[in-house]
Image (cartoon, rainbow, N blue to C red; front, side, top):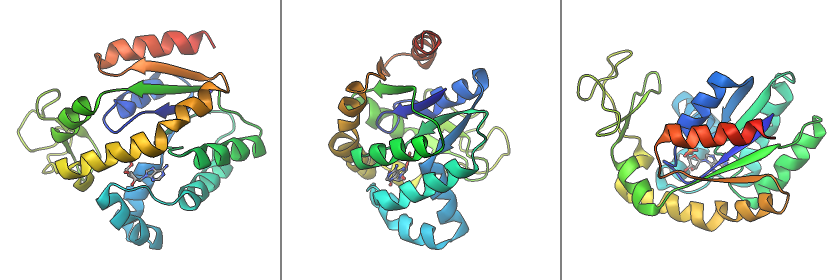
Length: 215
Ligand code: AMP
């Protein structure tokens, strides 16, 4: 089963992806995580991507398509895939269709998690993450046991640069302009499932799994 998680920042894609990984035989791929790792490692890709991520802008299609193409070639063919944060443009979606066909796979379902701009701002504004192990907390919804410290490793929590309030609005704008059209693209292929992401994450997940089992 190969899935795409679609939705604006803070729609809850990360949480849903973690639970899907726990319950289904799939691997997770996030272009955002890969780009952040390239930045942390100081690679050429990281140097190119950093100013774009900092500004809340999208990295050019050819670059993310190339990253996914390489990743797909090495992916375990026995396991399904959860794409998280890719594709983000119609050009990426078309490229993904071709790349999947080239490795004898196809996209089975696209889960579009919808939330309002106000929810995005509220959720991201309170988001803190651990720079060491990537654990994510929320000031009110999921606070760490000790303020400002990671529960798992004790590292001081940080607010991702692109999670700062002024960047959130730009990321949401990019989503509306470039990524929303993907819903129509996949609806026309008959594999789109729309979920209301303003509800409790577990409620969203129950609906999502019920729909997946019906595929
Ligand atoms: P994310 O963690 O998925 O929210 O991604 C963080 C940032 O990485 C985005 O705001 C973009 O700057 C960049 N990025 C991640 N995935 C893509 C993609 N598929 N296309 C273009 N830019 C991306």
